[in-house]
Image 1 (cartoon, one colour):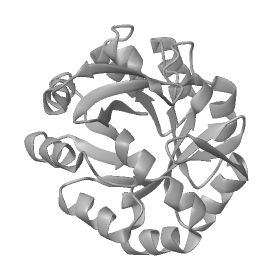
Image 2: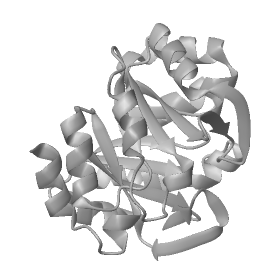
Image 3: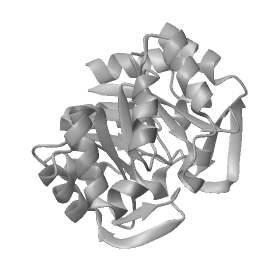
Length: 238
C-alpha cells in the first residue's frame, strides 16, 4: 500500500483543520517546502497536497508553494483543492505535479470530468469527501444529496482510476479511521481507493494495508508525533 504524507496549505503555511472546520485550524509550519524536504528525507515517495484556500473559492493562492515543492524535491506530488478548469489542471501538471485531484467540479460537471480524464488519463484523480454517506463539496461546507457509492460507480464508468475517499467526521479528530467504510470500499473493482481521514495509529495503517487498499493518507498524527513517518512507511510497505 502507498502512504501519502499530507500537507494542507493555507496562506503559504502547513495547517490542519478539525473535521473540515476552517475555524478550527492549527498551523504546524510556515515553510511547506522544508516540510516536504523532511518527508522526502524520511523515505517518503509521494506527497498529498491540499490547497484549502483554493477549495473554498476555486483559486490557486498557493500555486507557487506547490511548484517549489515539485522543483526542490523528487517527491511525486498529487494536489487537490479548488481545481475547476482545464487550464488550471494543465498549469499544475506543467509545474511538475504527478496527479491532479478534482473535487467539487468533478461532482457538479460530468462533462468537465470526462474531458479531463480523456486528456490526461490516470493523472486525474477524484476526491470523494463524505459526510454520513453523502458527498460534500466546496471545502466540505456543502453536502449534496449524492450517495458516495453511487458516485464512485459513476467515476469508474467514466474511466477515473483513483479516488481519494475522506470521511469528514474522522478527519483530524485523532480517533481512528472508519475501517468498516474502507472495508466496503476495498471490494470495489476497477478503481483504486486511497483512505483519508482519521489515520491515528500504526494499527490503522496496518488494517488498511491488509484490506488491500491502494493507499492511505497520513496527516495530523504525523505532525503531533503520534506516528513517526518512517514507521508508518515501513508498515504501509509491509
